[in-house]
Length: 248
Image (cartoon, rainbow, N blue to C red; front, side, top):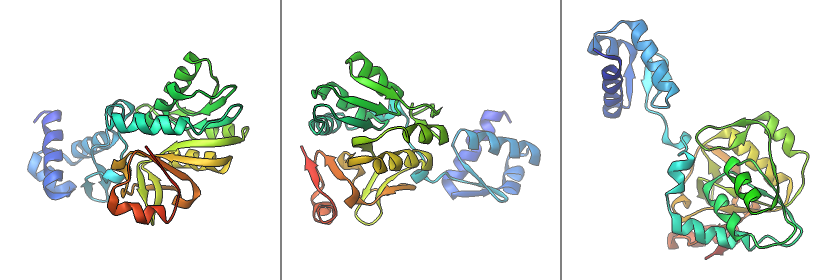
């Protein structure tokens, strides 16, 4: 059996069962234990499964994050509306932090305030800011390939050189009890530090994020204003009790 055929068989079995044992795969696929171990290591590196003791399991979707390209084409109209509202919160002469993400990226064409300084951890963001002749700083550190976000200890150290009037952060989950969440703990650290260094924080989220909970917590809802296009009615009262909602 070819390698890619084994991979397909492993993934199919995982989707059927949720968990597969190493010995089970050896028996079903007719391959050696060492071959199957290498297959599982490779599939884990592709984020297609998670190795566990004695076998493998499906990856928890709460720990996965879509790439920049995938997110760009989701909920476009909502993102534009949210981005316009967020940009209106920036005043002349302010120093602000723009988080990496497609909704904060969409803010940049709408920034009309004068003499603004922007710090960001988004590679795409700094390119757009420079094109608009906005004074900007890109954090140094490790670049996440699929989201083009700078993360890690070096980025955190860089951030401590700044203080912000306001920060604008993306999120993957907005829940009244669990607060704002994101799949990547390292990105969560960057977002949380930006919040700590800011006089005021805003979280930008389209309606698909409302009621969702992902792996890593940023902070509680009451610690930032929520900018969204529309909160679903069954969530409105619960969220409004916790934070100010700025809606389009």
